Amino acid sequence: MPPSATTSTAPPTLADRIEDLLPQTQCTKCGYPACRPYAEAIAEGRAAHNQCPPGGAEGVARLSQLLGRAVIPLNPVHGREQPRLLAVIDEQACIGCTLCIQACPVDAIAGAAKQMHTVIDALCTGCELCVAPCPVDCIALVEATPGRSGWQAWSQPQADAARARHDWRAVRLKRDKQENDARLAAKAAAKLREVEAAEAGTPEEQAENARKKAIIQAAMERARLKKLASQDNPSGS
Image 1 (tube, one colour):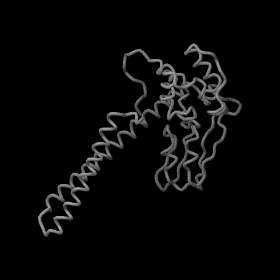
Image 2: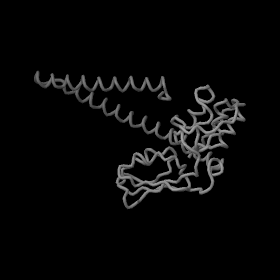
Image 3: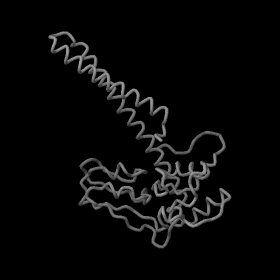
Image 4: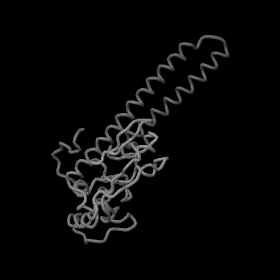
């Protein structure tokens, strides 16, 4: 798995320094889809520095020191500080739907379609995102660090590893989508060539081929425009 660190020699931005202080659980409780967007929002003044329950009071204090702001209580709207949680799958009840795998932001769940899934304990950040998608309610959350919460329940090496897995997952998903889009484009182009080669025939056959050709060309144009839009806005925001 490639490391998340960049080889750039540019000095870290404020968002970079804020992100380094976040626990990287990628839980979205802060109101943002991952730790990085939250760090950027803080740096740009769009979010407060007390919206990260996994970081807890110590996390708020760390951010306060970096930002030169007052230490304030964790905002209860985003949750409460608590011991780190661990997801546990009831393997007898699991139906292998893969929805939990798709939801896990750090690739901490192993399994395949229609096969039993299991959580890799050492990789689970306790984000809770796998619970809601499960259609058979077979995922429970247990305390992994009784009596310890915030940064007392989560180490910097764990945060760094979770960040690397999250970043690599994003790269992998983007690559998989590009490869799938390329396969679909090649399939559409081949079908278009097939239709164009069969244009001769009765008027009815020609009309049907013209209809198919129009449908394929419209689909290819939609795919082209969608690709251009994603290139113009790679973050999807």
